[in-house]
Every structure is written in structure tokens, then in C-alpha cells.
Length: 160
Image (cartoon, rainbow, N blue to C red):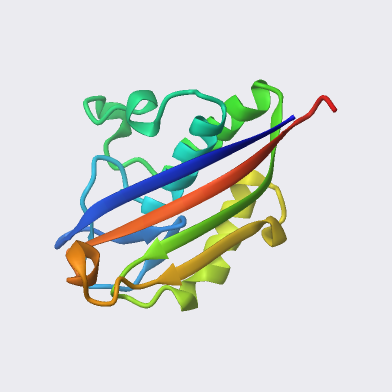
């Protein structure tokens, strides 16, 4: 049996924080505001996994009211959620994702993001697609106020 999940996340850009996307620190004068490290890509992937199995969402599982998640590395959250997916009897077939940012340019960082995600998920980099887009200077992302990400995930039951 297959299950598909869709994930989405957006965070406001702000001064005084590192910009972490896909588990990679990106050189930029601003970072993303959030309770954790605000990694929009990993958060979208987590929500896609949780959604595929009807396991709620990232905010329910890791509430921003819980101090233990303050500034937490999102790869830790990703590992925890993937363990839940595996315990439910599923494996990831592939991930397809988009990062939408007017700046900075994401393309130079994508190979390292794929490597970082694979180091946690162990599904092979060839099963992890990350694409970079802009919003052509429209809306909050296009006006350099925020960065967003979308992810789709395909899960397959280990019992065939």
C-alpha cells in the first residue's frame, strides 16, 4: 500500500538568526523566525510524512509552547518523525520539494541539503528532489520578507 503526504511551511525572515534550510547553514544577513531553528524545508517534509499517515502535524507533535524544542535542530525532529513512520510499517519511496525564496539563491546549497537529508533518512540522495524557485517579487516571499517550502512524499508499506 502507498500513502502520499503534502507538507508546507513558511517563516518570516528576521535579523539575528542563522538561516538554516534543509539542515544546512546558508550565508545570508537574515535567518528565519521560529521556535525551533525554523527550517522550512525540513518542516514541510515532516508535515508531509505526518499527513501521509494521518498523524496530525508538526505543531501538534512539537508545540512552540514546549521549551525543549526552543532552537532545536530540525534534523532531530525529522529523525524522530521518520522513526514514527517506520514504526507504523512504512518506508519513504521518494521526496519531491520546492524552496521558494527571492534570496538568497538556493541552488549552490541543494547538493549539501540532499546529503544532509539522506544522512538522517538513509533513502538515497537520488530519492530526494529539492528545487529552488522565486516568487518573481510578488507577495511576502517575493518581497524578501519570508521563505516557504512545499514537500510531497510517497510512502510504501513494508508489508507487500
